Image 1 (cartoon, helix red, strand yellow):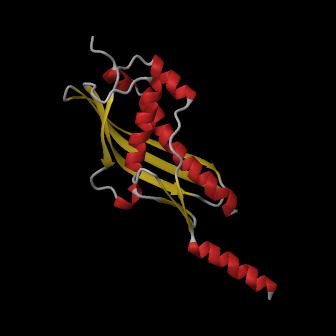
Image 2: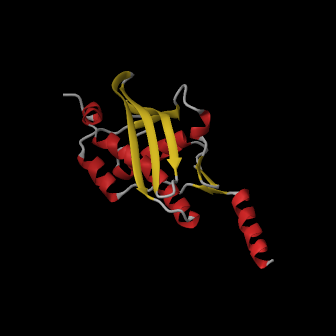
Image 3: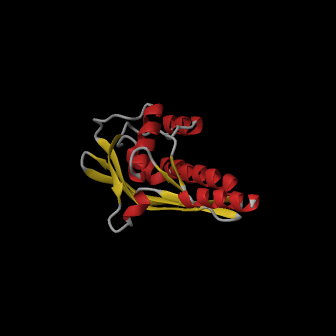
Length: 188
């Protein structure tokens, strides 16, 4: 009888699911140092939204088994924008009135908790304009895996942390992209 009650409680907990909100993006020391030494000019940050044709649900939440995770900003495209602004502000490179501006579209966002290997994919299209003229136009993608676990209490938080790290990884790719750096430096 006791076993049935424990089983019933466990199944109820799994069926009800949980929801969590992603923690705000925190600029890393490495990112701030890299941006400060990159030679790029100050940037304004424009609209970030879901790419045309992308499934609307990828912008709202992801699931890690019975747990859903969503950003406090309401959408993952807004989360990506907030992370970019946070990095630029921490680096002293944000200027809402700058002639150089970046905007983006969330193209893909996936999370697979897995039983032994987890996987996250984040892709976005970035466009930089200088005084209204396109200077950079590229889609970047972060796809990474990690050791997961059959045990949900281990796998779920790890998956959500890894998914969130995908946004920092994607922005790291942007900040290192030679075409982005060339587009954001002062014209010669």
